Structures are given as C-alpha cells and as structure tokens.
Image (cartoon, rainbow, N blue to C red; front, top):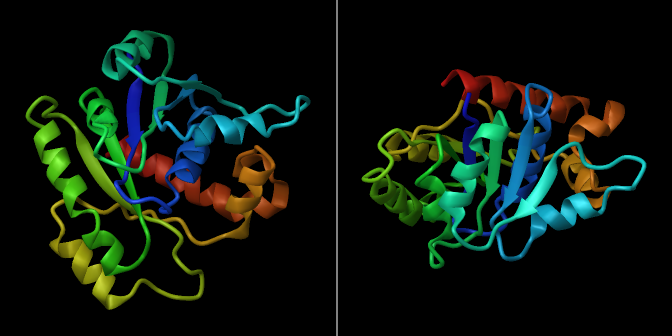
Amino acid sequence: MLAQIFSVANQKGGTGKTTLSMNLAAGLSKRGRTLIIDADPQGSAGQWAGLSPDERPFPVSVISIASNLPREIKRMREDYQYLVVDCPPTLESGVAQSAMTVSDKVLIPILPSPVDLWASVRLAEAIEQVKIYNEALQPYILVNQLEPRNAMSRGMRQALDEFDIPALESCLRRRAVYRSSALEGASVYCMGKRGEAAKQEIDALIEEILKS
C-alpha cells in the first residue's frame, strides 16, 4: 500500500507551518510508519528534531530534500504509510508546487484573521495550476493559533465561506505547549498533561483529514 502524502504549505511565513507538520507527523506515527520531508531551505523541521535529547529522540525521522522532490517522494511511498512534506513559505522557488504535484492532500495553516486568509489568494491560484497535473489533490485550510477565549470572528467565517478552498472543522488553538514542544525538540504527544489538550486537537485533525 502506497503512503498517503500530506504537504503543509503557505506562501506566508509565521502561520505555524512547521509546528503543524511536526505534530501532525507525530500523531500519524501512532497509526503507521511516518516520515517528515523537510523541503524548506531554512531546515526548520530538521532543526526541531535536532533539539531532541538522545534519550528521547523525536518519534519521526526527518530528511531534507533539496532537488528532484517529486521523484524522491514517489520513491519513498512504498516504504511508509504516511509522508508529511514541510514546504517553504514561498511560491517563488516552485518547491511547494512540486510537492503538491505528488501529494494526496495539502494543508494550509492560516492565522484567524481575514487579512491572513486573503494573503493566501496566490496559493489558491497555484493549487489550481497544480490540479492540471494532479487532479486528485485535495486542499484544506486549517485555522491555526485561534485564541482560546475568543470565538472565530464573523468576518473570518465570512471570508472562509467565500474562499474557494474548503476549511477543516478542526482548528488549532494558540497554546504555549506548541512553542514549548519546539524548544524541547518534542511533539505535544511527549509533553504529558501539559500537552493533553493539544494532543486531542491534533488527533481530531488527523481523524478528519483521514476520513476526507
């Protein structure tokens, strides 16, 4: 059985792309053999995993791929159940588009403001171009860093309804444990009681995208 491939992409930095990639992969690893592909030249995923202590390594291996991305991803599909591709925060290099040509789904983390959603218009256009080559690609918006005490604004909900890409029911709240896990080279699954609520969010997200 070939691996399901999830790309995590946004043309805008600071949306929590790598945080989502690492925790998504950690959750998927509990369901099957998983690999993180660090396609971002900044190497954030590899740096994150590199902070893990020797006695408690990150639960998913991270490899960096700088060229021939579609070919390399296809080559690894038979060895894993899930592949998570952390794409660079830009469309200029074409790396994100290359990853999406061989992906089953692309997750687009955005901050909970209409301005941030509108900033992703170019990505939506790029996805439409990719679908010429990969008709089966399923894109989803994930609202990230939602303030725990604030419901999503009416303006944001209206903006989501008008956008061409469907938004997931699941969302991730702004939680200190996501930042703490990065500093410790861990996932929220390794953070004990501190990570319980975040772990439930990631599990709910995984259940939704696997059923979609």
